Each structure stands twice: as C-alpha cells, then as structure tokens.
Image 1 (tube, rainbow, N blue to C red):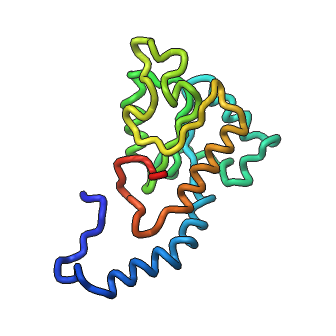
Image 2: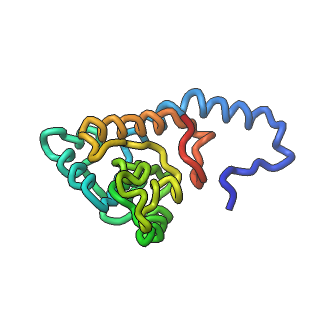
Length: 181
C-alpha cells in the first residue's frame, strides 16, 4: 500500500484539483489541526523509573487532564500517541513494534527519559537498545533521568504544535519517518 493518494494521469494538470488542494491547505488545515491538537489518545509503555514519574505527573498537582492526557488507553487500537519510557531491552523490541503497528493512524511516538532517548546509563549493556529511534520513528524526545513534569509538559506541547501545523494534504496516514520540524 502506498503512502499517498494517486491522482489519475488525465487529471494531473487539472486546475480544480490544484485549487482544491490549496483551499484545503489554506482554510481547512487550521481547523483540522486545532481539532486534532488536543485529541490525541496516549498509550503508555513504561519499563522503568520514568513511568512512575509520568504517573505522578498525571496526578492532581500538574493536572495533565487540561490537555487531554488523563485518559490512558487500555489497548493500542484506541490510541494514536505512543509514550515509551524507560530502558528498552532487545527482548521487548518485538512487542513494542507490534503495539505500534496496532495503533490508529496517524500515530505519534514520544521517547521519554534518557533510556528511551539514547539508552541512558545502561546503553553499554548487552541486552539494551540504544534508543527507541533504532526501530521506531520518534516525533518528540523528552530528556532527563527521570524527566521532570515540566519536561513532560514541554514534550507534549511540542507534539501538539507539530500536530496542529500538519496540513491535510501532507498528513501521512501510513508514514515511515518522524514528523518534519
């Protein structure tokens, strides 16, 4: 399956198609982006210390519910934002890839913590993967060991801004890489 819609050859030079695309990008994309911005449903995959900090940051003091982040999904089929935190081992890679494949499109990945971003202090271990980006396209990195709630929030807001700036004609429903800057 390709990742773009094919326009028939006889319509390639059609002025109406070009104007429709311009209209969608200019008028509809801002509304589309605004609607998608706070409508992301997270799936948390925590393997170590960072996941406990993530759950603590979701409590009443920081109130991540204001941004729609309080409803963690129980199944990947209901989620479109994958939050991976903690040390990723080689044994867990197939399960993470499988969960990512089951998620709804378009899907976004956040690597949270030093271990998920680049292996952390355990990256020299024989069974540790040096970052989630070795096997998944990562959209936002949240550094720290463990990251502070402010860093979580900054990472989420960065992803929200990227999602809002997406244009309808450029949304990759089956994309291969991370979102462009």
